Length: 485
Length: 128
Image (cartoon, rainbow over all chains, first blue to last red; front, top):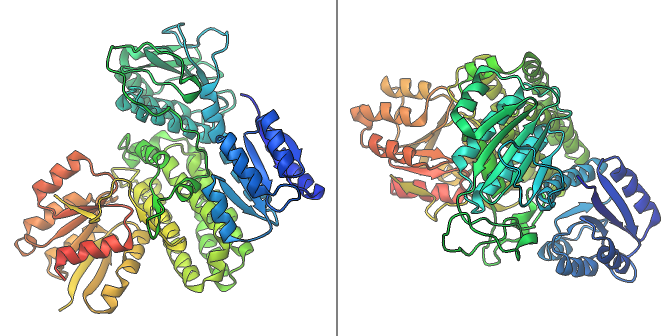
């Protein structure tokens, strides 16, 4: 996978050095610099950066002007504004032209890294898709007639597995005719196989290959695949569309409609596998890459009084992953490894800290105290839950809450009533997590281990709604809020 | 007289956000608000007559008991046969709708819901 090109734009050399030092620590970035807006525009034209960290106040051409020009010419470029001036008006203007995120100076290096990493993983997932197939022969045993692209998710860890899940569920919705039932079965199988390798992710990769008629997904392990009962049952269920040889597990997914192409290949003529009337379609991937929250803000409808926080399609996909299977807690816990269980049990030690750090923040509402909670407690929860594979929706809800709180640290610290509500609700979230651990891992008395996912997800969204003064709503919600049976 | 509204949800955060949303109706005495984390506890109290309601709002997916099963049990009781029950859900699947209809549940609300929508739905169902 190619490196992500990152352009750092700032007129002050020291600032560029600091940013560079921070970004260098993240693998997979190639970095160049520009000293002002004009140079940024020129560098963008010649080097096509994927992500730009853009200072606002600069000589010759300021960051706003430069961003405007760049977004017009290269809409796929992700621009993150970095500035010392807190100016809501400017933030609004920037988001209106498509700037994906806003970071305030002094620079919080963890925040920058977190943002860059999340943009990086989305970009990689999308970029892979556009990559032309190399000359190498197909990995899947079904067909060597691979026409379009090959997406490789390398060193699949829980995060990458999530990217893959989102990517393939996204493919179900883009009209390419992928059957979501089949994809659900495939995901279930891959999660099952991965679960046993969770401690040994190095060298696991996922390769997606596509012909006119089918999408072939192959999971490649560093050593021969060992199947447990559940995985064997899933493979039987998938039937002839699943083949295993040595270190490869391949699944064939039929594309039974007009084949759609990502926009890079829009103009190429594609023979439909079945002769159905061509339907008007959106390019498969709209290149609109934002941090989890940015997109709805940037594209909000102007006439609505309150901004809306809707469930986005990625989030829906995530939630769907949780609904794929209804596993009861007894089966689930007997399947997961003891060390994973230990990690969850260790979270118990965080229960007190959750309350304590929130209490300290409530008594002394400084940004640092909020960060202490987010990084010291929330973050630890996120990574432990992520390791479980099963609960990506829960982990996502928690981590995006963390990102949201960091972005809104000023509002929270300056508004005592919001602070109070936030602390109260976050304390409840903590209590919900305690009881979730109890029901799933200790008492094991729930018939559906995902019982909390959607409640938790919506609670996090509601917290964001309250703090950000946004109206929360489910995507397909009607105006009356409730429907009659 | 204040209408008695009960919410049952395994999530404390969901209960707390609902209570925040209904704050005005509660403080102005339009409704009385009571919450339960455990559906079995609520069912026991309803059956023994220690608890009653004018409107019940129930989560569907709870660890101890499914919200639709809870509604089914409650609806068996003559005292609550005609009382409205709303269920909270994220997925309004057809199966869920069929089951809800058969049980006699009044309606459903999709999570997450805004404050306004909750208030509006409550007023509509309670006629206040």
